[in-house]
Image (tube, rainbow, N blue to C red):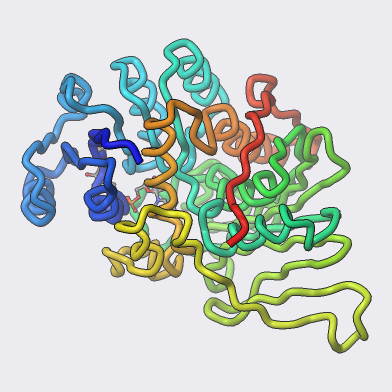
Length: 382
Ligand SMILES: NC(=O)c1ccc[n+]([C@@H]2O[C@H](COP(=O)([O-])OP(=O)(O)OC[C@H]3O[C@@H](n4cnc5c(N)ncnc54)[C@H](O)[C@@H]3O)[C@@H](O)[C@H]2O)c1
């Protein structure tokens, strides 16, 4: 293992604070600086985690030569401009989802990464969750057989979240459902068709510019015969939070539980009918991580944050995200997902909403998102 230490500056300390103890325990990472706009809250976090460098102004972070990369956890409208500014300042970027909310911003980030050779990673939690890693392992070891179909859902009532969510469009925050269906088969989306259904109240519709309650999208996966279906809502629809992912193979299929905390189901083909379905216990994948951060697949630092109350700890993904970015920087390789893949995953949602506005017309993903990264196994046999 390398002895090199990489300096991260954490930007945004709501959800972002959860990652600080993980970086602090990682043998090759150092939380060099914190940044948030609220001075009092910044000082409180700095004292709590024992971090000296504290900035309220993002530009000051970028001017600091000691910062190797920024981990951005600011509100969604800030992701793109903050990522672009960091790349301009010569910093690598890890940014929470989504990459951006327009195709043009995604294009600019992809171009800047190509120009500068800096690393960009979208910190998508789902593709490092234990359920995803388990299904990926079943797929890579041939247990699922050939994939025939996938579907994913992310219903989440955002009442009570920060105000900017009221200005959001469901499919503009779709990476938690796009990423597993594309990531599993190392695929990229080629085109989409999306329908809007139902309606949200007038006040929210005016604020966001989106009238629909639910957006439901079919994705054609490039260079495969597979299509997948994903759906989302943010407001005015009754359902418990769920980030589900179902995969149908020729030999085995995985179906997510309907209610949080209940067991998932594995179906095995060619068994007597009553033996086809069985409950499955999902193993943990902490063994893929350096020992000092293995405990973080189970423990949640900021358990009161709404994302944990609703999201059940994001499947133990946080230490895997940290380790992926640090490893990519140490090994001078692209992280997974890299900028192009992050753009493809993000642009599915943006193109889907465009399709909704045209009554479900097919919308093709932009060319700059269609360059496949070299294949890399995420999970080795446990
Ligand atoms: N599963 C997931 O991947 C997941 C879960 C939860 C949240 N998130 C993402 O994390 C982000 C933050 O969510 P949250 O709930 O913590 O939001 P929040 O609004 O509670 O916190 C945002 C933080 O960013 C800081 N900030 C905002 N503008 C800034 C600026 N210009 N300079 C420096 N700091 C700035 C704020 O001070 C605050 O600390 C969102 O983009 C959300 O999508 C992802």
